Image (cartoon, rainbow, N blue to C red; front, side, top):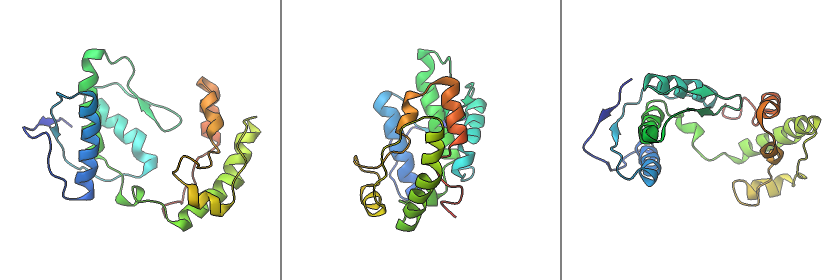
Length: 184
């Protein structure tokens, strides 16, 4: 996939997809104010579990070596400072080509949040503790629902921040952060 360059740097948002693109482009120009917005084409929508491999493949096609981490993230090591803007534009192009299906960007419903809470309480916390990580005490479901995505949200994965290297990868691989069927 090759990015083509557009004269326009600020298209008007007309759909949720267009709005998402505008927001992502705003993040690019916040760091690289002179960047030129590439024209993009949506190839297909993806599921979260396909994100890392799909975007890594796209970035490889854009000319950037990419590593998929065990935690589902990606990185492009060794990109020189002079190529950081081009990388940011390539990341924009790839994100536009392979966006998440809309259901993954909608706020979680109370039913989904209840399912997530139960999963964290019954699966994630015991898994994290089996690795010797401390987890903050769980709030009640009502408090969890009320504080989700706020500064007061219960963070069972807070202990992951202290891990590095192989230990981090081992814990992340063993302790999933969400149930597989959260969006079904």
